[in-house]
Structures are given as structure tokens and as C-alpha cells.
Length: 141
Image (cartoon, rainbow, N blue to C red; front, side):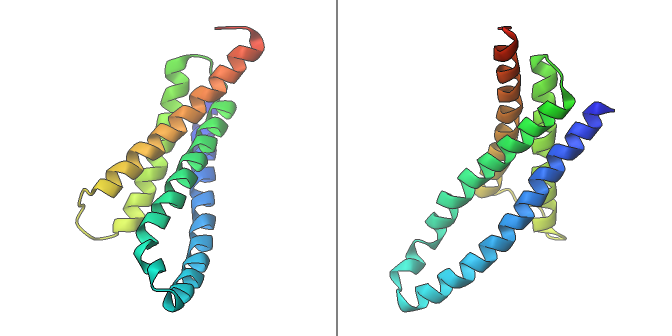
């Protein structure tokens, strides 16, 4: 039961933070587009800017979600901790992709693959980081 609570808590954290960040992104994008109307060179860097900001935020958010999951699950074996982190990352990214594509045909893009890999890696790393911190505190290797 603790595992299920941990997975739900980690997934909810990631999804709620992503929703809040999406709202902030829309507000920033409106301001950016207004500014870009006066300065045309800003339109050229829109895509790059989105990735330079988006990917680090995705990594940090999923990392924290994986950390929260591992903390709530409180399991002390590598495979169990990693599996919880992987599951949270997979559930979160699957939910994002499902909502994004809606009723469209599933098309695999480089951006989609990068988002999937980054989200799962971030949450897995967060859960393994939790395990490493706990092992360092207790003196285990």
C-alpha cells in the first residue's frame, strides 16, 4: 500500500507542477510574443529558448517527483527504488503525451523521445539520489 501511495504522490506532484508551469509558460509566451513584435530577432530564438528553459525544468521537476516517491515508499534496495522512480516518470510522461496528442494519431518525434527519456531519467535519478542520501546517513554503501 505504501508503494501505491508513493507512486500516486510522486505522479501528482509532477503533474500539478507541470500544470502550474504550463500556466506560467502561457503568460510568459504572451509577453514574449508581444515583445517579439517589436524586436523581430526574438522570433528566431523562440524554439531554442523553449528548450533551454523547458528541459532543465522538466529534469528538476521529475527529479523531485522521484525523490518524493522514494521517500514515501521508504524501500532500501536499488531495484525497488529505481522501479518506483521509473514508474512515476513513465506515468507522468504518458499522461502528458496522452493529453497532448488527444485523438490524433501517435507520431514519434525526436522531441517526444527526448521528453520521455528525460522524464524517466529524471525521476529515476531522483529516487536513486534519495537512496544514496539515506545510505550515506546510515553508513551503508
